[in-house]
Image (cartoon, rainbow, N blue to C red; front, top):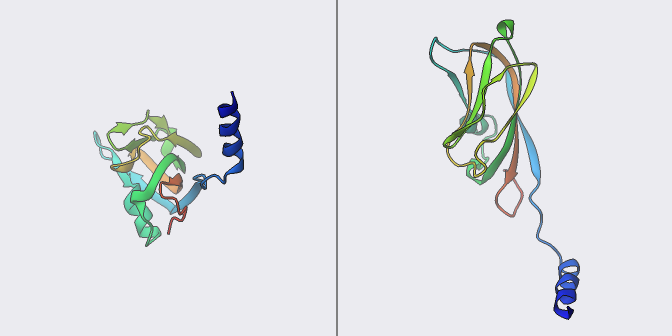
Length: 138
């Protein structure tokens, strides 16, 4: 009993390491038009686009939580799917704004937004967490 009290006392008394904080990174696509070919998907390579728009960012230190896609599709028939590493999310109809949860928590491997149909993308927001203790993305 006394040891339990001591452990709890030390837990609340000692400073805790900085908790990892989720951050949002906006990838601007300025209404880019993406169109898949019949039987194939158009792909946005999110890590490559992240490096292109934010030079100096270390993508290997990032854990992806979710992707928020802002865009429209012709006649509402466009479809989107998130692929992270070996796993893929479900397929969702593209609306004005949609959230796609990361299907692979470890976040290694490719991060791809796969699109079917005629889709116009305004922006993609990545909700990420830094694996390293510094908390700095750049």
